[in-house]
Image 1: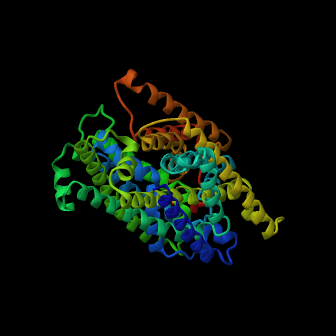
Image 2: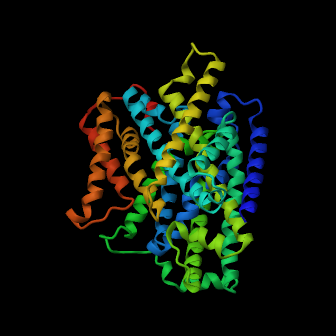
Image 3: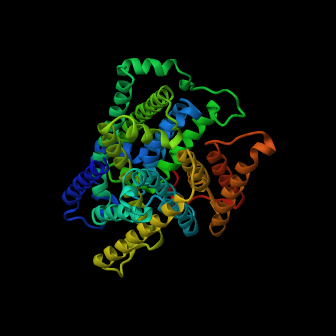
Length: 487
């Protein structure tokens, strides 16, 4: 079985490198950063599904069903509301200012300290988040494949990062647009096939499986207890601001949108993507319920992030193993390729100012970009190895908790810039951006004991609000010099 998985992995990787070769020919720095503004909107929309879901969704959302039932669908509905804000509020601003890094907006609106602060929090958020998404996939492949060959976990991590580094090194976003399309196709195919195979293993049709799920205790959607972290309004509100922050204020996701030829194409992309994602997440929850029903019936002791791989690899046969591994690998690469590209872009544009360096030749700019790209890959290796020593059943829970802390300052900064016309004392912005998440972290750790209240996704909203209020305290009324900055 290990050999089958190995050859599946090799074949998949070779296909990715073929796409890389075809898309990176004649690529330059603008191809890397913006795809030369020629990406077809429907290709971007489809590929973003895989990039948005990642290995954490592939593994953790099905495993989450026993704890949260189908309440996650309210979060997904909140995602949709947030995507509409992105499409019709944020993206017009980005396109009108012709941004490469979206954090350049903060310099236009507030100043250099705000610009650097926004970009720093993105670098922190995306490094932690993308590493976590990669870790959950690599740890499964390590457990079921590489450990049998005596390959240490650290070497497995280096191997994967090296492969990802190679196929993003030259083409950047131009390559990723197309590799994400392939990976989304494989991921969704694996999702559907696994659901069908679980139904067949229980001698059911897919329709019968769906009926059993719907009559089970797993399909609870609405929780009305305000003290519960699963309360319906927390899910919708939190989902809305998670999507605004983790997509609309995230360089990785917006870099793909900004590679479309114009704002209308980008809005078509975002609208199509948001509707499709709603149904895809519903399929993940259906699969999770089916897996738990199968596990309970067969007496399989597995739950959380271990549920899906345990059943697929150890109980459903070789075909299920191959399908699962293909889906898992398809979830791995989008977690890292876009992250590496966007981190390189943000650091190169926001901190090294490569786009405007007149004293650098194009060749030198490319060389510096390559160095930055490589160093972020090394950083990923270190963070993933750190996660290896931290065990948790629901890593998607950790992902959203990290996002609630690290994306809050970005939410507050952009909201203040877009909703007010006030100027801020730019040099104090980093202090506000650090204090807000620290306060939220302390509240999250103690809210149950202090207020008999449990935070969920709405912690992000509070974080953004505290940042907004802090900016208000260091602001003064003044008309903007560039009225295009407020849209």
